[in-house]
Length: 105
Picture 1 (cartoon, rainbow, N blue to C red):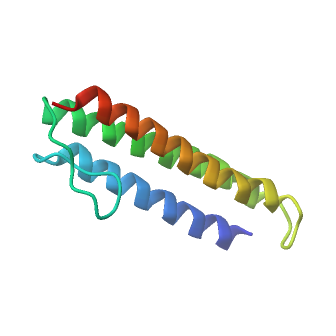
Picture 2: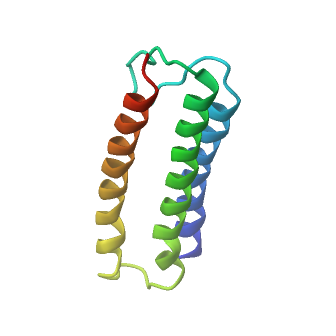
């Protein structure tokens, strides 16, 4: 399942790229698609907090994919891995809402 892990890692790389983009942005970045970024008191601190959220998300996502290296194809062991991803994404949304509340004008 090396190919599966490589594809999983590429998806984690997308999270990492979003984090790097947020870190380097001069304007406030949004988290939810289609929603305007909030007006914040300190753009740099806000963007760095959102970037750290994406970096942590990328690390957790990559860690969740590690079992792909050790499981056989069509194994029942994939079920917990797949079910943990929505939990991770919901946790990221909750963390973002808290970041936004802390930095809102």
